[in-house]
Length: 215
Image (cartoon, rainbow, N blue to C red):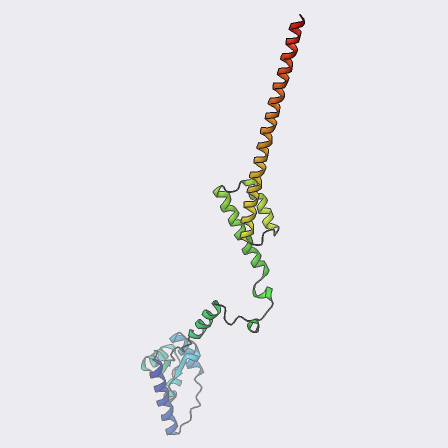
C-alpha cells in the first residue's frame, strides 16, 4: 500500500503526536517484521513505515500472510518515492552544450584524459576513409589514386577533409596536365616522324630520278 506524500506525512505526524501525548516509549525490535514487509511490498527496508501505535500487533506478525494483512489494514505503509528533480541538471547540461561552465577552472584531468588523442585520430581517419570510398564509388578517383591517398591518410598527411579534397583536385589537375603534355609530345613526335619519312621519300625519289637520268 502506497500513500501520497501529503497523506503519509499527515499520518506520521498524527501517530507521533499521539505517542508523545501518551508518554509511552516503544523499544520493540521490529527488524524481522520490516524485512518481511519489504519482501511482501517489493521495496527496500528503508521504504517501510511501521505504525508506532500498533507495535505490539506488528510484533506478533511473524509470517508473510499476517504482514500482508497488516499492509492491507494500513498498519504497514510503503513510503512515497522521494522526488529527485532533474531540472537543474538539464539546465546545466543545456548550458554546457553551448560552451558555458567549461573554462579552465572547471576542468579536471589532462587534455588527453578529457578527450583521448586516439579517439580524435580514429574519428579523423574514418572521415577521410569514408570520403575516399565515396569518391571512388562516384568515379572521381580511380583505384590507383584511391590506394595512394589511403596510405597517405594513414601516414597523417592530411589534417582534415578539406586538405584531402584539395590534394585530390591538385593530383587530378597534375594528372590532366601530364596527360596533355604527353599527348602534345606524342603529336610532336608523330609530326616529326612524318616529316622525316616525307624527307626520306623525297631523297629516295631524287636519287631514283638521278639514276634514271644517268641511264
